[in-house]
Structures are given as C-alpha cells and as structure tokens.
Length: 139
Image (tube, rainbow, N blue to C red; front, top):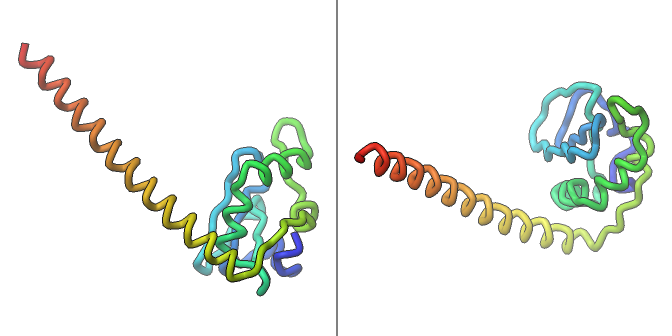
C-alpha cells in the first residue's frame, strides 16, 4: 500500500491511523484510530501519508474487495494471518486528496444517518416486544 508511511507498519506506539487485525482478516477488523495509544502485535498499524486521507483509506480497508484480497494472501490454516509486508504493498488507487475527503465526508454522513435509523428501529422493536408481553399478560 503505497499510501502509508513505510516506518508506520508494526510500530508499538500507535499514533493516528488504521489498525487492521492481522489474524482472521476475513472478519474485517479495521479501526480508524484518531487517538494516541498502544496496541498488540496482532494488529497491523497503518499510518496514511500526506497523499492519502485516513478516513478514505479506512473505508477502502473495510471494503469487500480489499478484505477478499487480503484474505487470499493469508497464511496458516487454524488461525489465518495477514503478512504485514504484503498488506503494505497492496496498491489502492487514490483520487485527488480533495476527492478522498469529499467521499469520506459523504460516507461518514450516510453511515451516521443509517446508524441512527438502526437505533430507532431497535428501540421500536423493544417497545413492540414490551407491548406484546403486556397484551399476553393481560389475558
């Protein structure tokens, strides 16, 4: 992945960037870390370079195409793992940084709205379950 800083792979202290679960990559365990911290060596730490927007790369990393590609490069049968160097060498085509940011903002907005709708639906389901139980218990 030409869009990360070369020294940012497998560093013990995480600055801002993406954390990609190195074990069982098909589970799409990706976190956009916008904080300083530390992590286990089971995570691949990817720090975007100046030509790439971190949130845009995050959305690329959780895409089915990327996960399938990384999954095809894993080794190990019982606990498949992704090779950090192979992941770092994956080429992700990037639009201009301004377009990356616009895409990221759009995806953030849409996913936020969808998450809000999901919460409302879950609340409605809980209320309906309570109403159902109340109806049954009255008889």
